[in-house]
Amino acid sequence: MKEAVVIFKHNRTIIENFLRSTIELNELDEINKENSKIVFKLLSSLELSYMVDNDYKQITPYFFKDKIDTTTYGLSKGQLFSKINIESDTIFISNPYISSHTGNMCITAAKSVENGFIIFDFNLINVLKSLSLIELNKPFNALSKLMYGAIGSFLFLMAIVLLGYAVKIIIESVFMGGFFKEIGSIFTPIIAITLALAIYDLAKTILEREVFYKNYTELDDAEDKVLRKFLTSIIIALSIEALMVVFKVTLSDDFSQMTYALYLILGIASLIISMGVYRRFVTNLKND
Image 1 (cartoon, rainbow, N blue to C red):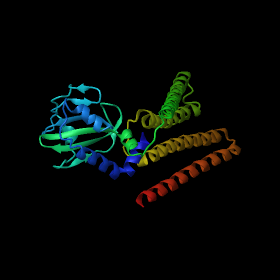
Image 2 (cartoon, rainbow, N blue to C red):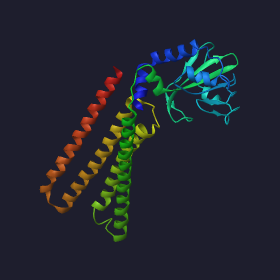
Image 3 (tube, rainbow, N blue to C red):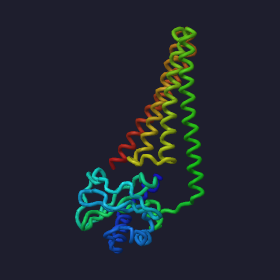
Image 4 (cartoon, rainbow, N blue to C red):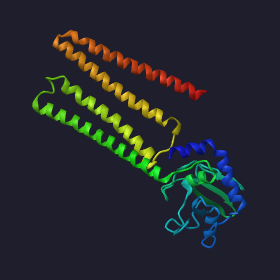
């Protein structure tokens, strides 16, 4: 969950010192079939451990709490270590990420040893719980995840419905000959597609961040980006609507209705100004 990553960022020094001291105090310089059970008892938050040699070739199986996986034995892990520098007698601690082996949010500790490196994958939530930095209520979390999943899925369905509606209008207008006669038949599909895009982005963000936890990069401004994209789509849709109203009034020669178009344009202008002020405020806040 995003909150766990934020807590990690705010307490990074405490967490890193805790993991380093735990590994060093227990003198964990090797993991094998004989001592793996003991290692997992000593490190309650540990999910996975293995060793690689100095060329980053895996020299032990994957050791889990309740199983041993030998499928990746002998494979090179060079791509995982190419961007980090682990000095002798030090322990490297990674940023939080989604483990491809367990599907949980974890942090990796890599310790330099005599014949290579020993790797420890810790469950982030369990580490935070060990340090009393977080308290979880599993039933509530499950319900929250279910609700977010249902809402995100419904929004995704609505985006598909809007897209289908736009396609339906275009097909009907083309085959019935109204595409070039009625101005609404041109702009209505564009508005529907724009709104579908905005709703799809919102649904995608909800599902990724609250249900699937796919992406945790740039957490500080992720919501800001989603808000800007959503508002931009709404402004585009309203601008097209205002343009359509102006065209309809002009073609009908009933200029008494132009007041409504003016109100709509003023509303759009206020949205643009508000978004500009908001962006300036956010930028200044980041710079400070």
